[in-house]
Length: 594
Image (cartoon, rainbow, N blue to C red; front, side):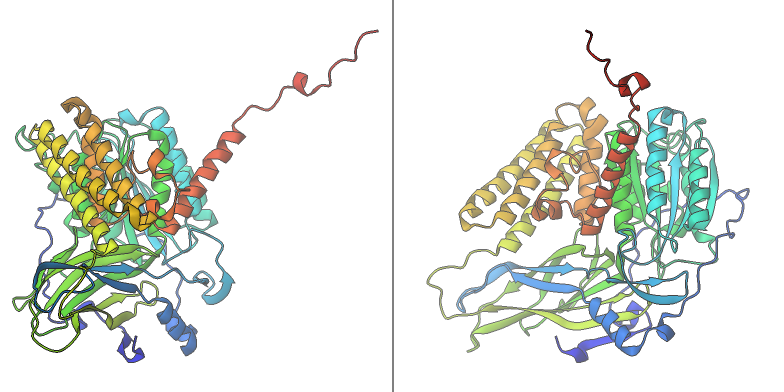
């Protein structure tokens, strides 16, 4: 890459791509926050640090170089004969976020240290986290104990520059811990607040979300990263049940989301990562809240895996290295126009001239990956060029720590060969084939879910089975090529489809677990971000499996490390809880008789 194409200045994404149109994302109406809610402007002040004045020029340059996003392109075919045209030609854009720096900035000491980072939790920018926790009557017993244990793990793995607030809700909501730095005293206060949680009343989800949102919006100080984790094991017994009808099960869900934390014009969203705890929660509600704020929806069917689910989530939140990422795709040939961009739930925009396209990606965790399929039409060629330039890729994002705007122009270009004729037609790219299968899986899950919601379980199972058959055919066709990574990814997609299909044996099973499994899996595929499901932490998705299987669930290395830490903690706790041997057992055996 030409070094002159790099530009790092403070500003906004719009100043880099001015022709990119800002379009409304969601039009949800909001719930009025009750006037009796107190002001939450008592958040603890952040340490003051001026990175620009403290980092020498060489270190700033090094920081920018470490922030390069890896971009690769993979044309569907490596060559198209000049006499041929190709409609809906796919080009895969693969992006991978940079690793977290090996050096860490000591915010609390107001100085930059060069000590090697050994704490897995400190991989990215400081975090403001609000935990909104259900303490309604259905959480009594082991659920409450497991939730407390999971929150204890979260608290212990936050760094001294991170801040945490805790909100509990039942038939009303209460902020039990203000937004405090997670230094030693802050952790002690937070742990005591969690320990004191008690069960009471019904499930007023709107109240919990309102209070959690107000903690965020009332902040006097702001860490670079902000998020809400929201856990509930039941259905809203106040706002939603009084409004929805039998013909529209999702009616009223959008009203639960305060407008202050939804994405809007020049206002990034505060992601709400929702956790459906057990099999009695309302997955449509949890999924709606997550989707509207660009969060993930995790289905924690087995309640004893809640700590792992929290660990995976915060492993990502503590490793944010890219914010407000925008990608620009440009035609690199006068005869080529963009037909479409398949980007899942990410917003895309192609102007009328179809020469450029834009993808609004947002935040990326360290080493997190994204794939986008661009469709173009390849015309016949009459010129003498043997190589056809097809696309060029640029991007811009904000560094969450330095607040600098990093731009890379034309970081990657895609091209294909245009020979006079082809003796042997080239095979479809392995990478494109794999991405098509992933997209096809997501589309099949979406279609099957819609059919199941209408009561057509036979049609839903048929949709999943048909997709599974096509992916199996692709896998068998590719088996002889020796690409084990692709085979394992395709096997994982097949297994996911089969798992959802099994949950559609009848409507009772679908409503109990199939619905949540499908919604959580679809949410994960659409965002290409890891979320916990009964499949995701099942026997097919263990963390010690190969990298290909792990990448198919979108789990980043920092997420995997945090879950591994969670499991070590759980194993240690289990060992500590074993009863010590009795005095009689410790005494030596009596000597043998004469």
